[in-house]
Amino acid sequence: MALRFWKVLVTLTKQITANRKLMISFNRKISSLHDHKATHPLV
Image (cartoon, rainbow, N blue to C red; front, side, top):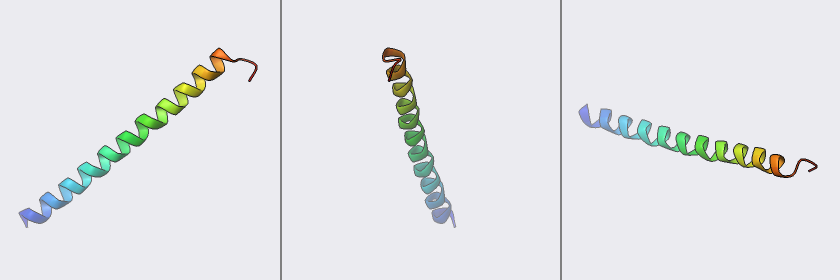
């Protein structure tokens, strides 16, 4: 029973970490897009 609990916990932790990495990369893309528009207003 405890082993199953740990497996679920590890899986959840991995998913949360992956989601956090996705959000970070997503935010970086958005901020880089904003920077691009700021440096090149005509584009």
